[in-house]
Image (cartoon, rainbow, N blue to C red):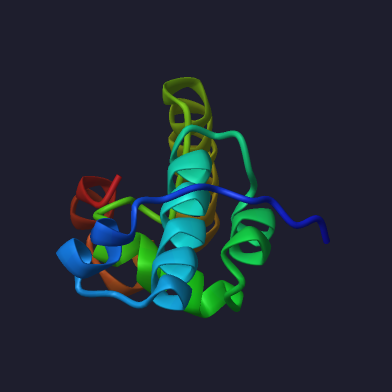
Length: 111
């Protein structure tokens, strides 16, 4: 791991009510969350940058009001399309059982 030096005015720590170590920790988390939100880092890599476990990083995402699920519009449409297709196939496979249990018209309304 590389070390980076930053010059921060001493008054910053007092203003934030944090020690220098707390400031550095929070800064790493904030940077990792932002890079994850922008899609520059995966969730696992962002957690590593933040110095957190993945589950703790997900909690940090919540604190910063960033969704742990990052999809582009295209990816989301593809996922929903696949889910709908799979769901329809599952219902079709179950259709004969529905016909036996319910009237034919009642079974059709499920689709």
